[in-house]
Image (tube, rainbow, N blue to C red; front, side, top):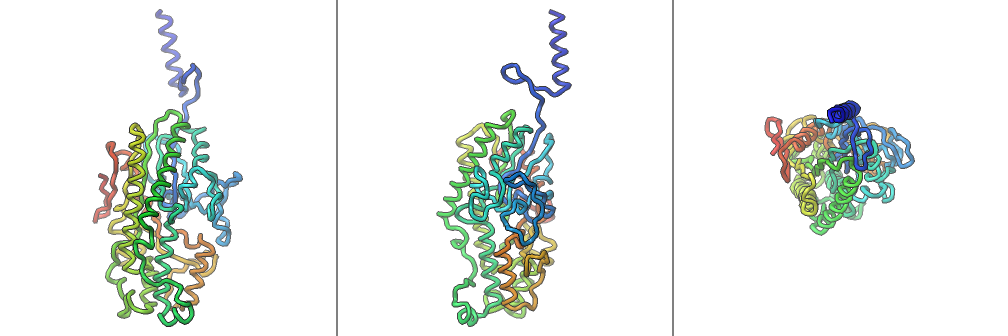
Length: 417
């Protein structure tokens, strides 16, 4: 018996030394390296943070920057950034990280190739990409940001709608509006119903919940040990509830007057070309996105009480540092300003001062035709992603709870609660 015990001890030492796991049936395999995976849309991919990495398309080709005039469907424009919050977070015990999210990602892109829908990018479904990671790694952490783009509305469309209304109002007089444009270009501030109706939010919630359910089902099937933390992150508004006083009027013209080009140019330069009256509806939209994520969580948590699942609420993470919230914007903000190009050549326009409406319209059309030229607008910048990375660290290290809130204090520190 002593000899048998000594032999068993020797086997145990060898197993520990070479990192071998004993699995059912007596077979053994090398322990897989641990991994964290990011899934979802632009707020996770790193949109706005720069240093975008090549992205493998559906043919297996790594796509680097294809040029400004390339089709926006190119896989590169998933804009997976090395500066994304996912890479800035402290993740103890994680050996490798895989960013599988894609700017513009929708719930349908979870189980289907993005290219299967209009305006989708040429990347495989995020579940197929997740399965590939699981073949070589033990997935321990999953960050998901999903819901701002769906079949009902998209963040990009909402942002474009409100910015375009402001620009049209600033550069086009009422008589030009009716005489030359036929009155068919909206110029009034955005309302809550313009952005997303209650019915649209409800439909988007159902759609997002179904996609999240597919992710959890797939993780249960492919994760090596079946143990993983899943964090559902919501969204933060890049704009304040009101702009700083210096951005409210110019030459005695406010954005409630007819044609206010100097004010329009000033707000564009500061990164917030939008009516003041549109700001509050924009925050209602952000709150609705937060409720969307929270309600999806509640449904899934009720279905899977044993799941290690939590919400990371970052709606207050940029408090006091949003675009135009303080003088000196956009340099002191945590979000990217709206920027356009006159043609798809990489020359970013930082000032519209002195421009006429024809030139402004040309730049706006470039954004529509070549969306990548203005794709970064109103997303977290590199500094913003650092903050969101700190929020993620806090969410993963906090005591188990339903919702972890990450809020920015007036001195720039964060409170995780």
